[in-house]
Length: 323
Image (cartoon, rainbow, N blue to C red):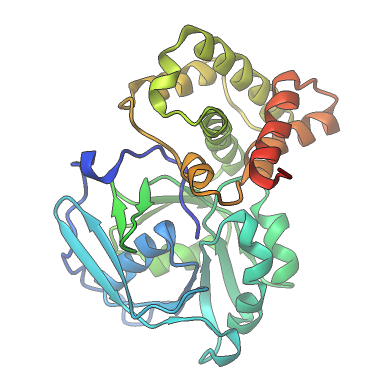
């Protein structure tokens, strides 16, 4: 299921965290009803935030489970299940669907959207990329589809639990549908920021995601960015992405590529990312929505993308084969 692409260390090395298990009283008696589709790293984190506040969501996924567990250095939160696996057996529609599947799993999640969405249901997409709305809207016709940027690092662990580092935070566009998301999560550990210029926020995050693709190609972690040749390549790639982002309407200054590279340089050498973890596990990669989009939108604007023209076919082959 979906994982945010904020770099993460191996669980044994992660000592920072946000204290878990403290109940948050609800300030409002009537909250939006919520379903989480895709109880992976991101879905589990948001589900746990809701459960702590007494608003346990409906859980929907591919694998039946009797509970979810979120951990950090301070403790854990257990979210009672079950994780439902049959869209035909849902109890009814909800006010808000938090779609936390990966971009490669949107089509497979379509039956859940059909079962959970009523006339006024809002679908908030918790995944990487800048094309969330166009990818999900065909599966939720007539319903508001709200993109988001997920800012917290969460990692699925072999025992099925999720390890969280930092305070959960989402950014969504400042539009009427966002009020449903903000109200559902109000008073929980997961904050919601409303962005007047969501395009700039989303593309800034995409630049970070795109650079992380180099880690999947090399099979190396954050320490690779200390090589002088990788730093030069990274800046060339980020500047290429920046030109495309600006053509798409993002207001990002010339210093953004260096700031993003500096962030990678500041990480511990053994930090990885979700796309690297997927490569190591032999899973499909989100290469198209993270890296391919730069080349595609570059062509649409007549912007040369020489680095993307090399990176994208290699990522696609790493993800899909053949061979």
